[in-house]
Length: 97
Image 1 (cartoon, one colour):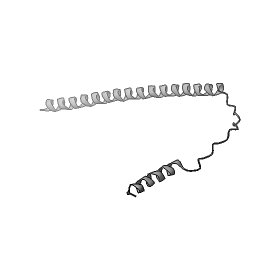
Image 2 (tube, rainbow, N blue to C red):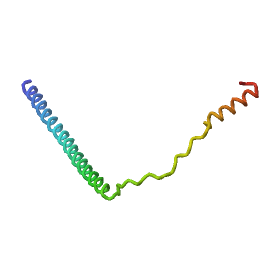
Image 3 (tube, rainbow, N blue to C red):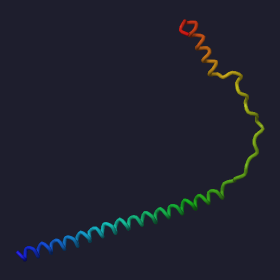
């Protein structure tokens, strides 16, 4: 009976060590993947910022003077109101209004 108890204790200790090692490997892999993602994101940010800065240097940012064209005057009567008035008159003629 003492041997069986000792065997159970040894199995529990080995299982705990194996579980701890397995979790350590998984956590280590996740940590490594996270750092790789961070490094890739930083490189992408630097490339984007560099391209953005280069593209603004090439563009001509001068302001062109406004044209002297006048804004078209608004119609004397709202076209929607005119159409609604026509519809209302038609309904009255038909006896529905």
